[in-house]
Amino acid sequence: MNNDKDLFRQALQRQNERAAKMKMPEDMEQRVMKSLTPRPLQAERELKSKRFFLSWRAVGSGLIAASILLLLVINIGKNTTDDRHPLAQQSIRPNNPQPAAQSIIEEKKEETMAVVQPKEKPVKKQRPVQIDKEQQLAKAETPSPTKAVKLFTTADSLYYYLTQLENQMGECRDSTCLAELSNLMRADERIKGLVNKIIHKQVETAYKEEYLVDTTIHYIPL
Amino acid sequence: MTNEDNIIIQRIRNGKTQEFGLLVNRHGPSLMLFVGRIIEQQKDVEDVVQNTFVAAYEHMKDFDSQKASLLTWLQRIAYHESLYHLRKRKRQLLLPLDVGDDIPDELPEATTAEQLDEAIQKLTSEEQMLLQLYYYDGRPLKEIAYITGKAGDSLNREVSRLSSRLHRIRQKLRIILTRLNNE
Image (cartoon, rainbow over all chains, first blue to last red; front, side):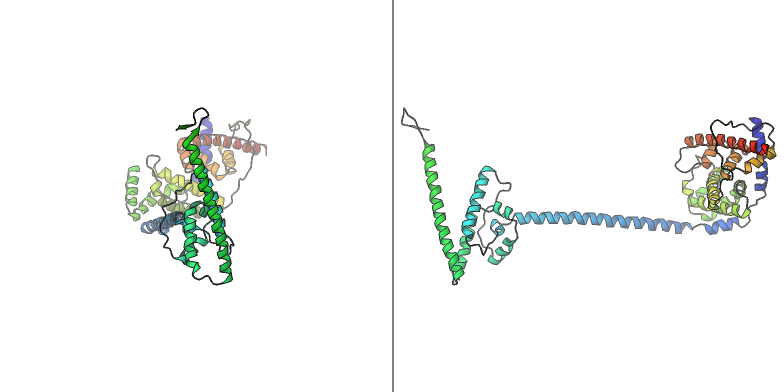
């Protein structure tokens, strides 16, 4: 193996002799120094790339922050819509022949559901209605029917319709208005019947609950 | 030598760029000799050495005097620069050989230095350089591994890779020499 090494050294000698003939040119230093990027320039380049990176990072973070803010605003906007006064959320059906009657049916359904399932959001305390009519109509055009049904109560609804009627009755001259008036009168009769029915049921229940009928002793107070 | 190099490097790092010329003058001739072993043309050797110094300047912050001396670090850069230069020239393997594991790596008996020199010429520049570093310079495998290794490579892995590579080169030489003897 040592012989091999010597042999290799001898064989490689020729290459080394050739390499030894290569002298470094005198201007090598100048050539190298000319090719070098000046350090300040290099530092400037690094600074530039750093700035570029930082600006992009700032833009990115700004975009993220803006989108989060936008989402929040949208979300708050939604909540605000939901929290509006129940009256403002009602959908108006001007061409409906029996608006009062239908709304009462809807309200009754809602009340029944409310007894079975407690509402997710408690309805805010009712404020006296002083909202401008046009404003109300504008607001009432858009809300989704499910949310609107959820949030208003029968009393609110009646209160609202009565206010509307009070405003409209003075200007009621044409045939359409008169027809609507007769519809309202019919609806009023139905409301009266409904109220009577409810009162009757309540009296009956109160009577049954107050006294328990026993066969041996006639009336045992609870 | 190493201490002086470190002082100069420190000055360069502190902004005294012109001091880099000192390093060029100190290590330029050694690098010329180093590169001249695998590249034959004087002009090409000069270009490679120049590129080596430029690369060294640009990566001055990466130099770690604990790992190797400045000259070894420069030789590492020069080695890769030379290979890059040769690859650009599309110098292909002169004698593609299939080397199996069953071939012994000892040189045939009665091989002369001239024959071996002729056989070495048929190897690739990279292989010739490995032989130079190992047999002529007598450098330890670890140092050669540092020169030939690439950034991020594990030194131990590079040493074992180098060892098997030298084994394959000797096998190759044996085949070439056997063919030369038969001719």
